[in-house]
Length: 210
Image (tube, rainbow, N blue to C red; front, side):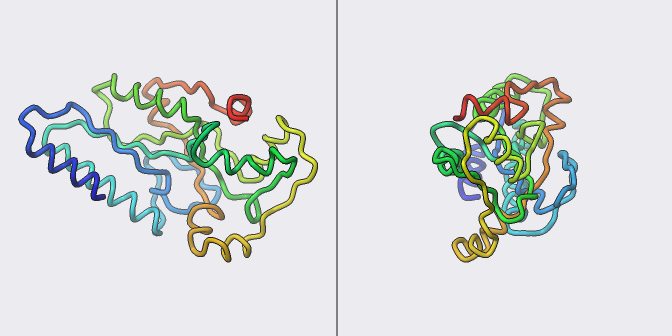
């Protein structure tokens, strides 16, 4: 919020303003919805992530008062071979150990890093587009589905869940906020605007990630 507020203060001072502001928050904007399918018009369920992302987007949208086009990027979990969440997620699999979090039915709305960069460039080059855009692959998976997909690309000796109680003991409320709950989010606005994903499915993405 402080960073976005600083950008707004800069916009007020500039005589020649930028044409566009792309603000990247997260699919946490929607809160927890179980198996409900969410597009950009999806309802919000109250919670820490939802409150933070909503405040973030509201602040970024104030740039429109300065004549600046605003695109709100609601990012899924960005997967990359060398950085971010995936190397840690994949480490047990590299050792031949499959796993999923808790019951494994919570949704993971993911996106390949390369598609994130392509989506940003796409929006920068389309000045007629504004508002919210889910930047997630069109085929989300459950935590258990992630395990099953990696098993199709790696030899796994043994698979087992990481119990919810252990997750909560280690991470407190953030275990529920980030790992034991999720959202099934689809990139409807991007696709309707004509964007296509290089990595629409996890099976397409995993060879580049592993």
